[in-house]
Image 1 (cartoon, rainbow, N blue to C red):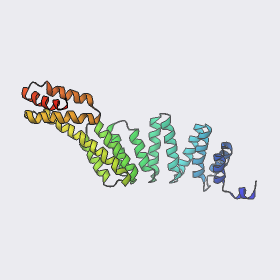
Image 2 (cartoon, rainbow, N blue to C red):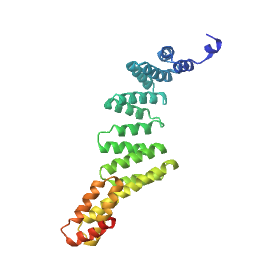
Image 3 (cartoon, helix red, strand yellow):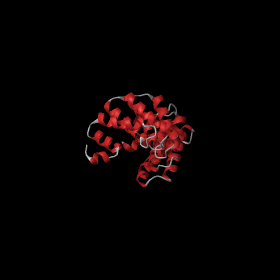
Image 4 (cartoon, helix red, strand yellow):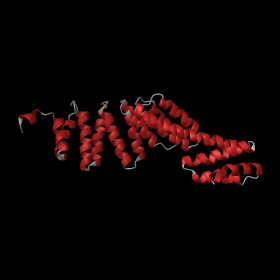
Amino acid sequence: MTSSELETPPLDTARRLAEDGDLDGAAAILSRLVADPEGPDRAQAAVGLAVVLEERGDVEAARAAARTALATGHPEYAAQAACHLAQGFEREGRAEQARASWQAVLGVGTAAYVPLAHLALARLATDLDEAERELRAAMAAGDGEIGAHAARQLADLLMEHGEPGMAADVLMEALESAPEEDVPGLRVQLGIAHLELACAEFAETVEGGADPQTSALAIELLARTLPLRGREEDAERVWVYGLEHEDETLAAEVRLRYDRDA
């Protein structure tokens, strides 16, 4: 071993060995560092050991190393370790263990990792209320890019559950602080929410028993808007409803509007 190699910090040597494919050599160095409970690099070494052991195929030993790093409470490496555990459990479909590990990330409290943990917990949520709570927490965690992503996810979720008005409110709030590059996507999604709101208003007008001219207009607008949301079959049913309506005046008004495309 050369003098320069002797002067190289062990963590750097382990990293170089791992990059060169010598996982056993890297693991040996990292294991020695982890074994020293007073060592200044113990937390970082434990995370590195977890990664190396996982690449080597020793999943359980990798998790033990990650738990060692997590137990140090180090603001950076404990958070990394919890993320490592959570992602591994998610890949295996072990939702409860993944959820507990993401909660551990929140317990460490490192700002850079908190938004990611909330997004993950939303992904693993078992009901709408839980998902909404975690997505709102991700929006409020201070990372503009992740906040915009969370807002779009929450808006999609709310629209899926028939709440386009709430979705629009979420998107409007997100637009107030979103990074410039995220604004176009948020605006498009806000437009989609408004389309859903429009459809709901048109449908309510028809169901509310408006006069024939107003109802016919609402039917036409609803039937022509629904395809914009990929709902062609629903649009056809709306046309049929109007064309076959028992109110002959309404049916005739709808026929005039329908025949515009003929």
